[in-house]
Length: 244
Image 1 (tube, rainbow, N blue to C red):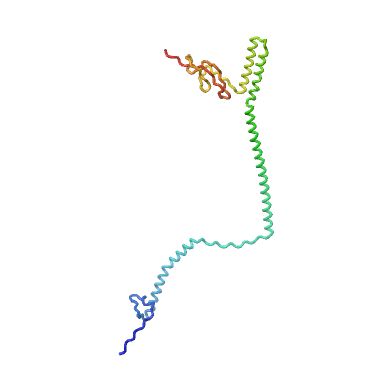
Image 2 (image 1 turned 90 degrees about the vertical axis):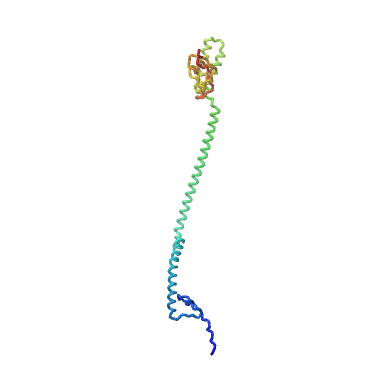
């Protein structure tokens, strides 16, 4: 009896593990009739896998398309205008530029004139302020000149009676009052008025029949310049009588 020859290893068959219920064994080659069945099952599984992958691929492509902005179509190439049109455009631009330069020059000249006028007004205003401060008493000084003339005339006349002297003093006083009124210098003589601490200065208070804080005597008249107290009136006021 001859010894049995070993069976050589068979090449790997890709369909050995596809048939359900069978375990691939070396040398276990399925019959040719099962090849078509295994092939159909593989094709069915492949189609199922493609059906599962296709929606995901389409959704991914849609999302990618949404993120990417659409490419604008290329604009058609511009045609160069004819030389006559270009020359006309250049002439128009030059004319506009010349007009703009003329307007700028006019506005600059007007600005310089306005600045010079403003400076002149400011200088004149400063001069007026200086003059007003320097010659503020000019009007009052002119009104006081007749008073001085009257006093000098009274002193030069030696042979005059008492009545003439009195009349001369009254005339001089009237001239002085007129000068005060012209300068808005008002006399404050508050006899019989209520005491006002803003205009009066009380020297003393005495018992009197009048209401308390009433001016009963004026020792020295006061004066106001444009409602501003130049000198308060020195007065004596009344107070309530003591109970007996």
